[in-house]
Image (cartoon, rainbow, N blue to C red):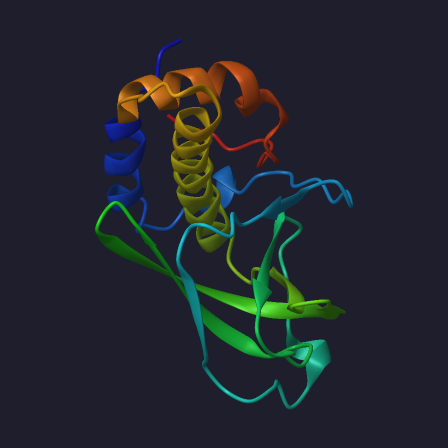
Length: 172
């Protein structure tokens, strides 16, 4: 099956409508089910509120989590709006901080989702981020200049099968 890069990007715009409850997936929770945001793709975060007054009230869905590097520590249970800039568009997501670990040059932030729709949309955008990173890496390492479509096709062939999944989503 061939999926075009622009088709994936166009699909993300459509995904703002909720997934019907009968189509909510059976999510797997594995430590390996974490998406690492590429450092070369712009990501900004803004606090939506300080922290939840009652952390037990936060209900995270059992979906892949996102990790990214940040200059400061963020308190667990803090709600954030993430803004990812890719292909001249800004995509916004609401997430909750799960963990913040110090690194030599800042902090490694791990976030989860309260909404299956947010997790699904973010996974789609992260694939585009990883395809763009792949495209840049191929140019730097091999000198091949790939178009977006070519990079998407190669990335899908090599890496899509190992990218964290959202099991059980009915795409019909």
